[in-house]
Image (cartoon, rainbow, N blue to C red; front, top):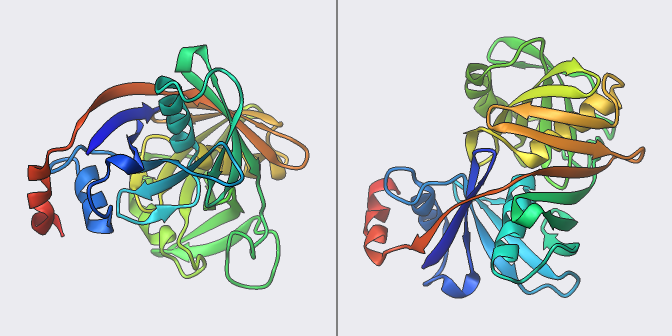
Length: 284
């Protein structure tokens, strides 16, 4: 099984062509490939390119825990770089179909940077989804682990819960992130961002990613947090999102259509040996 590995600000993915998959890429196999001791090690797998009836390409995004994500900003930038490296695209816009909607990608700087038009952000509870009456989920409160948090929720094609904070830290995300991810407010679970406003053009976030855990960076999380800051009126439409892995530039239209620009780094390529899959029973 051949693969190529990339990272976007420390958020790493393995790209595998469907034609290179031996057998079914089921959940336990995904968990093993992504395992950082017994496998290659990554936050997830990008399975593509797949055929699309509506777009140039189609992509499946498989989380570290074996579940499937609707959309991933870093994943889409990495997939775009992979297509560029394989000679399937050049420095011209192209479309990618994901379960979370169609995006437009544009590779720049010889593959070192990618811009993705990620679609419109919505704060409607029925679209995210969040339990309760239909509403925009803005500045609501929840009690998690004995602590009251003020939060907003959004969807970029996948669900996000943005926690408004005076200060953020990895410990905060690691402790409360898994509790919020699986809270009953969110029927499909949720990605979680802990958001600090720096000024009108800059925000800082720590991230707990649904299905992957604590991560150094996330494209869709950056968009969700930036969109919340813009919707609340505390930031302008052009926002730099600062994360432990680095920064992404987000632009939001008046209708909350989001465009993301950020780097991609190629790490390595190789072949997964069949012997590795003998470890499946060890990790379950």
